Length: 248
Image (cartoon, rainbow, N blue to C red; front, side):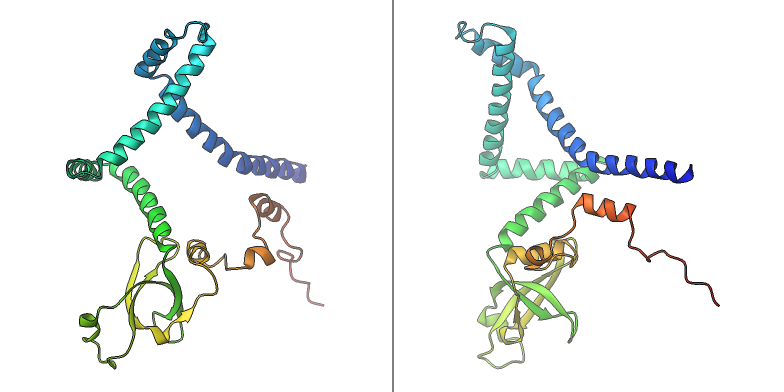
């Protein structure tokens, strides 16, 4: 009886773990879409457009479809206008004012800063794809870290280092794991750098995964899926939890 109850419980937990990511994604997308469609202005605009073509938009279903299309077009237009406006001086000042206001509001600032940091991480990752990725001895000799070459060091700055004038110094950004938005600024001679065996995208995957994903590892040994992990949780490796043999 106890084994049967455990089997039922594990099956329920597996189903819950598999359905939660899909259900949560569908719930967020559906609520955003419903918020747009139920907006009074959007519905009024859709009904007004339907009057210009009474032969096409005759019943309530067709008007509802037109309203949904108008909602999507308005969202795309609003994002375009927002991106275009922030390129101007007054648009940037308005954005910075709103950013400071939201960053200081209690409780709201935690949600806002979390989402903003995710966006910044994505943009930094896209920028890093055009940079050179290397490995450097950091934080001490004998330990290696992934780093991105940001720029060659200017001659005026290079002269401050007790190195030969012909030494090629570069500026490196060493990101932290698993949050690559923070890191360390390192100056190193190019002769002490090792090439990373992969692209900059592969390097970002290694950093974000905490070393669980390496270049070429996905082809040779694909990582386990969520279903595989749940199966291994239900059926642990034989002998992993077996009790030690009794002493003779």
